Length: 107
Image 1 (cartoon, rainbow, N blue to C red):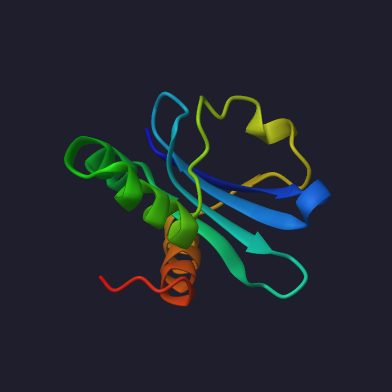
Image 2: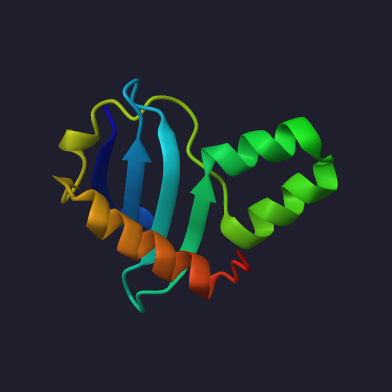
C-alpha cells in the first residue's frame, strides 16, 4: 500500500514529502525549503533505477544535480519525526508537479 507523508527537517529548514511503497521505501521524494518555499529535490526511484540500468555515471550525476538524491532505506518511524503528517496523494502530486516544474523537468 502506498503512503504519502511529510515531515520537517529542522537542521536544514526543509519540508520533506515522501511517497513510499508497501515496504516503506521511498518511491518519490520532494524537499522544499521552508524559508522561501523553493524545491531543492524531486527525485523518483523509477527514474533512478532506469538510469542505473540504462545510462552511465555521468547521466546519474546530472540527474542528481538537477533533481537531488532519493532517500535510501526504509522510511520506518516517520510518524515520530517533527511535524509528521500523512497527506493525500493529491497533495503529494501537487507538490511533486510544482517541484519538477521549478527544477526544470522537461517531461
